Length: 258
Ligand code: ADP
Image (cartoon, rainbow, N blue to C red):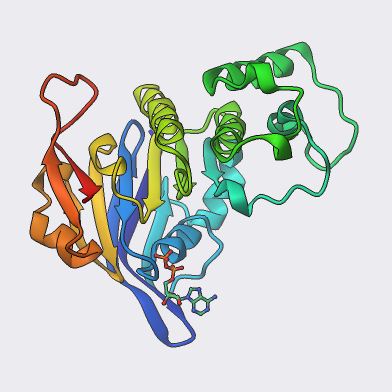
């Protein structure tokens, strides 16, 4: 069982502490969303979990190892999905090529074995992009690009998956598709951590919500978050509406911009 444990973590740029005393855990089969406004420390927290940002105080352990050691040792088990608009491809890669990157290591012109082709194509089927496999990644819409990157992460068959604003600048139908795929991955025992400043879909999709405003203001079930806290975090223009009780996929409540 893969587990992330963050204990009393402080993160700083020079002496400026931007993440203070954060503790959280993530297990396989769980979806944790860290939400908070811009500048609240979400990206810095994610970078430290991925071993890119040094720890100022406290600890981060993935299966008992520091992030750098864990990522070295468990390579494919820990996957990261960047924001699609931060991915600048210099080469004109097709959608298929993008997912096939998991087998490229550093060599160019590699040929995949049959079982590797099957893994790539299955990942494309999962994100509903098989029919676009020969199109250039750069010709896709934002939602399709994000799904192609999700296919790349899925092909690695991760145990823990970290996502940076996966629904940023996507339309409602693309957002729904991404959360549907994430819900399936969760069912398959993948532990998922999402950071986002967009709270509309994430609150109802997640098991645990962390509200980060440099310190963790709340960590727990989405159903227990008070409207006051949502307003303190995101402003008074957000309202909480109950979910449709007949909707089998909906849970608890939903926060939406009013
Ligand atoms: P979020 O992802 O929630 O928008 P960030 O983690 O990017 O927040 O930023 C948290 C704080 O750290 C902000 O005040 C930001 O200005 C600061 N910060 C982020 N990156 C750097 C950096 N490379 N150098 C100095 N300060 C930074």
